Length: 140
Image (cartoon, rainbow, N blue to C red; front, top):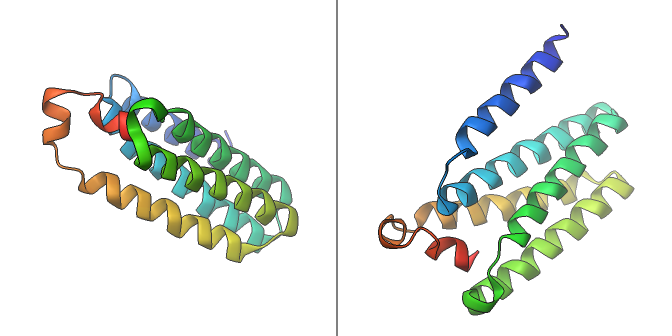
């Protein structure tokens, strides 16, 4: 078996174990990790000139960000959910342009944004998860 294929399978298994049965808050913490990993992979592929691999990683990052976007409870999340939706939309558009223009600077920009979102979710106190597991997911 190709080493790269084995590594990808291991990552997928790890991701499945982390997400199965996870609370909404935990999913929102894990998904950005996947996007970060994929964007870094896209940049590495871009640096190597490996177009198919770059496209694969960007497509995967787009799907993860779309999952985050679809998880927003707009009717209950108010301004926070609205701002997150706009930010997710912006990140998706930047990734598309990064792909089309082969622009690593745009990947770095989106990477910084998703890392900020992850840091913010990581800072949300666990108290939100104790009484109502959907509370944090309703925000974003």
